[in-house]
Image (cartoon, rainbow, N blue to C red):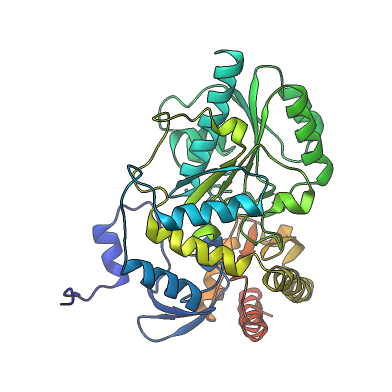
Length: 406
Ligand SMILES: Cc1ncc(COP(=O)(O)O)c(C=O)c1O
């Protein structure tokens, strides 16, 4: 028996949805690889990847297979029971990373919420109630719960909701002296994105992360890396911390880890994990069999030398062509990022107009992203075909030519 489907259109959004988003004028209905089709049958190249989520594109056979196989077996049991896909995925994450223990949840914000609560809990248990301060970076983004907007360094997301979580200091990113001045023996955690994503696709400098690690060790604070956007292959390494060789105490992962199925994880060591004893933290859906079955298929495909090397090679293809476009049309002052998380910084003349590039690109049949008002962001599938890269960037160039009147 199929569910009756009433026809809907974009205009319905404004009638039935809370107006906290402003979605594009078209509605995607189908995707395959790095192509998406809308209601009218128009085909677009997808370089947005559902905001750095669709790590293997749309309808990847390994993910569809894992999801449908699990859908016929067992969907949900809650954490009153454990389940096979969750245990298998946790083992894979432990084998592949610094971590000994995994906490599954459903979104980046929840993974960070767990990370921040764990950091405070550890400090509370070991050093008493005064060690609760968190030092984070200005212009960072960690999610939309009250704790995560408070740690995120962007007042536009945290103001206007009453009292914030206190004990949080923000310092400029990549400024080691500022970090040194902010960290003290009252600090329980330093929280950083190895590549600031929403803040403009800005990679951390190596010395900065090394310095952060040392400061944490000197002050008995924990180093928390938010790899919600940079993780699961996007940097060309399974996690970006591996590129830097700087190991955190706690790591949050979401977005790509589920390849499009909502899921997330917090990774940590055995020593720290024991502070989340039975009942201290939890979630109904975290580690759901459907999500973890997909997550297993994602890591099996992504964590291979071929896919990770492919990410680095595809980065070069994007970067060379985007630099050329930027130069030719005078629109980008810098093309930066790592792997398949790439940001094109708009020149002075185009500052604040990233949305115009998003709109122009969509009209030429290519989906891109913004990272703030001054950066055009690309976060495609890690297995995007080279032919799709070329076609998508041809379309993007046409969009830039139209926008600039060239
Ligand atoms: C670095 C980072 N952390 C956390 C989040 C929040 O993730 P979610 O929207 O899944 O809660 C995001 C989302 O963009 C992110 O980029």
